[in-house]
Image 1 (tube, rainbow, N blue to C red):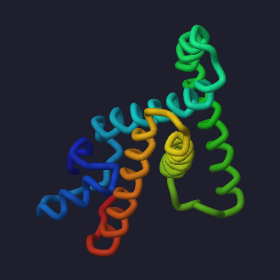
Image 2 (cartoon, rainbow, N blue to C red):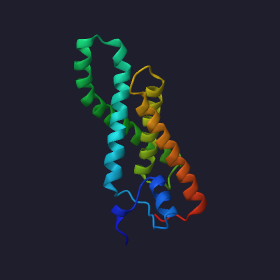
Image 3 (spheres, rainbow, N blue to C red):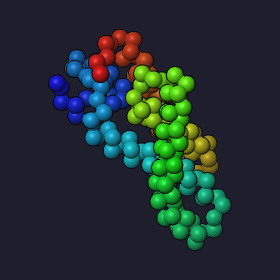
Length: 157
């Protein structure tokens, strides 16, 4: 069995490996991807919350609100993940997505939420809108890579 930590969860690094002629396996054990993308999701969620609060607060209240936003975002993601688990159960009860693992469905739903947050950041009149643009470009590149991997290469799970 191949070392799962050598594989990649996202399609873009797998496509790059395949183009370079290397073996690329799908794996959920790549800690670098997990930490990098997890940090990006939290950062985008934080900036989304900050973009909602920023124009409504006076200068001395901004600092307090931004500090309280850190645990607030964490609690918010716990609620979102719980709601996602209910959506997965509903999908399975209706017979949709029964061949997919729960964590894959939740990853897609988290990606949808994070991309929506990034789109809102991108449309806000704030200086950190480039973070939202970077996320959307990364998602577009990964989806394009997934298309090419599915089209030209046989995937092994």
